[in-house]
Length: 179
Length: 179
Picture 1 (cartoon, rainbow over the protein chains, first blue to last red):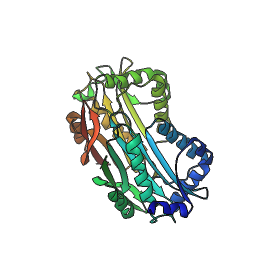
Picture 2 (picture 1 turned 60 degrees about the vertical axis):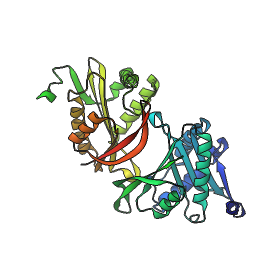
Picture 3 (picture 1 turned 90 degrees about the vertical axis):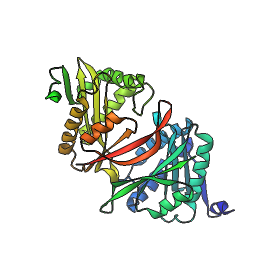
Picture 4 (picture 1 turned 45 degrees about the vertical axis):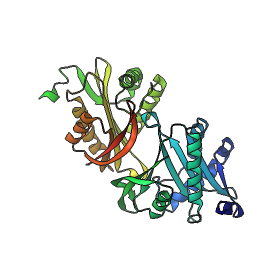
């Protein structure tokens, strides 16, 4: 099966665990690589290992509370992709917010598909109350939008000029998937 | 004019300050009063004094960095309305999200309009990067939507079934104001 090709390439996909907090530095390097390449992500400044660790601790607490799925891919100890899906709070707790990013050099090899598929499957199994998965994407990010459409997401809204990217104000697209 | 008579009614509107942390309990009671009446706000479970204080501390810290404007109304020491506006940061730092809530018994007297007017004026002066103010309303909350329209907001999107309120999933209306 195609899925197994990642193992041959030395790519391992894991769910975030307590012990991964020790390698917060690798997660920070991953995030900072996205900032360096000016990737279409919301963050635009680098993050320290300490800030990253705090963020991971927050994710892990939600994972343990069964309100979050957090998967990552690594190769030779280097983090090369992350995918997360967390239940919103209060009156929005039937909504799960999904986000994924893949390191430059590891795109278009099916890794995004694999992480997305796996995250959605696990979310359906583990996150009670989940009815709708929601994501945001930059209007011009066609590869990402195609990936999301492949898994059934549909555009629900397009908000004008929400993101400043490469000198322009670009649209934000909100996509939904009913599970 | 009717909207100017708040002082006569003993209602004071002002920005959040350090000393207000001492009355986190009044803010907590205000938040919990909205939950008790099942108001169309996102939170739907009671908040503790500690949570409220932490939230106010974070709002104050952001206010000091000019990333936040936070106004509230009080009468005889009781908090009867709050409104805040927060820059989203990162590549969305030209967008600020707006929120407002008024205690039951003080609605329909122009207090919401007065708070909005003050906060938008203050935000224009303090937030140099601000271009767009964004808010979310429950589609069933016509009084709120009318108020937002009166202040110049226009509907930009309607995302289906995003909020669980009184046993139903209602749409989220996203409104924008260019400043």
